[in-house]
Image (cartoon, rainbow, N blue to C red; front, side):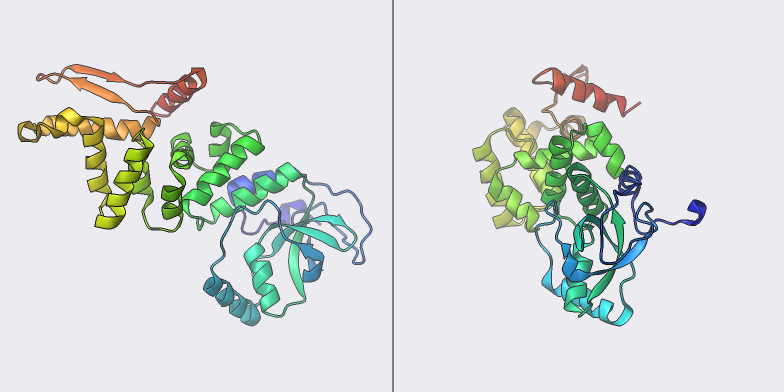
Length: 303
């Protein structure tokens, strides 16, 4: 088969790059001969009962109604995009990506499903599964954050490398990972869409957990907007400003807004000092050498 005519179906840039890392498959006996396992364009019809689920699957929830709708679509239209698996042995495969399609196919009564067969070690399995799910853009913020954290800790990726793999800049990756520092109850509410990513990013700028929880309760009980939360956080961070509401100057409000945006951008509690002539300084604290390097790297993104 001419390699120039091959086409990868439904793969994002990060996942496609991962799949290129493993272009050969060790020969294993199989009831159904697989003639071209070494190619990503090698598609095979595999018995659904021979495929086990992916132990590295990052998605923790599948919407029942959506899954049933997909099953109905597959029953009528068939499988449009093949799943991806790795071969473990004779008539034994493990899912890399496409769990919704596999489960929906079983519901639709299919006995066989089209699949690309790859070879992959456990780390590649984890990377492929995580990146494939992230690129589908239907994970909630906490699932994305957990996926990013697993890619960094279990696959030994730096944030810069991770950003390249998933097509996001380092600041975006860092903002998601910071969500995992929030108390569990707030993470659960973000996961369940009771609060938004904007609400959570504002809350994370508060250092004290009790204050975070108190603010969170008010957000939910009083249905605060993200803007209202950001204003409250600025007051908490700068009590003297809350006591001087009548003396507000438009420029000072602008400086406080800039301070808040910088704190979110750098992932650190940035402080700005300014006098009446608008002269002052910006301070970006760091906790250790690695944190300093992270800030310097973030500054580099501005150039």
